[in-house]
Amino acid sequence: MKDFNEQKRYERAKNRVEDLKKFYNNLISYTVIISFLAGINYYQNEWRSAWFLWAAFGWGIGIIFHAIKAYRVNPMFNKDWEEQKIRKYMEEEQDNNKQLWE
Image (cartoon, rainbow, N blue to C red; front, side):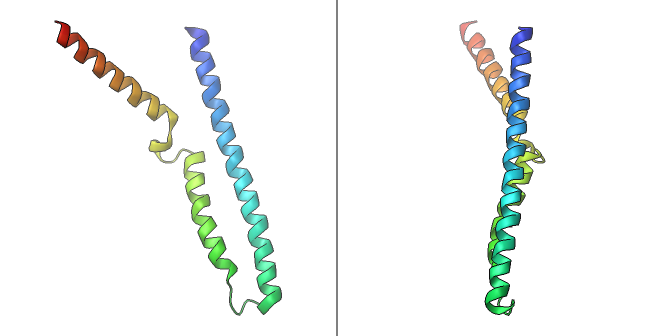
């Protein structure tokens, strides 16, 4: 049982690191591509029409949600929350089955 719990903790930690890595990669891509688009925008019309801001805003919303998930600010994205709910419903079902057989 101890090895199983240790394995589960390891898998959760590994998943968390993967989530953070994906977020950082997304953030780096955002910075590079939006900077590139801003450069193109400036070259074309010297920001008289700053169209690159639309891309920055749209992708920025996605970055915010990705950060919320990666840093687990919202408990609904948390795997521990999911596991707790699964255990709770399994226990409720087990209790209901016991009551049926008594």
